[in-house]
Amino acid sequence: MFTLDQIKKSHSKMESGADFPQYIKELFSLGILEYSIYVYDGHAEYKGKEDCVIFSEAEYSELYISSETNRDRFKDSSTRWN
Image (tube, rainbow, N blue to C red; front, side, top):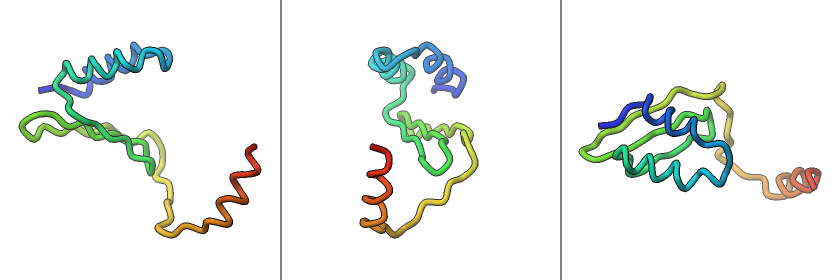
């Protein structure tokens, strides 16, 4: 249905956020119905009709993501970025 090379070609045309709507249109024209980007390693999952699914490779080493949240610590560390 669609290939990772086709997706990469469409992605390479995107130079700024202004190009994003056209990028999405191109993905739909390839037959992609939805996609997800995974934070823990940057890989993507593209889904199309008839259970077609393609995965991209990881973009970086897997990150550890805690299953618990420390709200006070998060608030304290996030204020340092302002």
